[in-house]
Image (cartoon, rainbow, N blue to C red; front, side, top):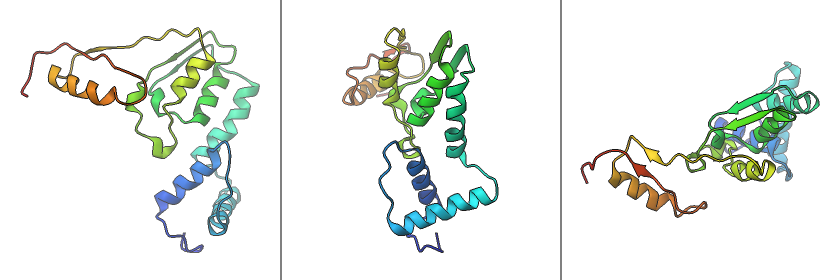
Length: 171
């Protein structure tokens, strides 16, 4: 970052690197960013290292050539990236069962590349999949759930039914 006089912190630089590596349609980086990106990649290569995105990118062709799992369970599905979704599909190719658990309303890692749109792609890619929606809530009061439902229902996906299984609480 200092060498290429980039006006960003380490976290922002690494997020940019990750986004660039995993983005399907790569737009060219400006010259100083491109030089810093190349230096980063050269450093990894010289030291025979892979970062997390490289691990995924290197694993994907192997998974496509040799699907591994008859039964695959993915938890926190709302937090996967499009690249990780491709990996799930590759691992599941020819498998007997794919089971995903997640809540698109809880996708909070967009800054790390997660995409709740993977739920939509899942429905398109597996049209016969059975969807089970959990609507019973044992943790929150009716007042809180009414408020949450009002807010969440304004986002894509329509009205959410949240049924409380607790007594009224403090307003």
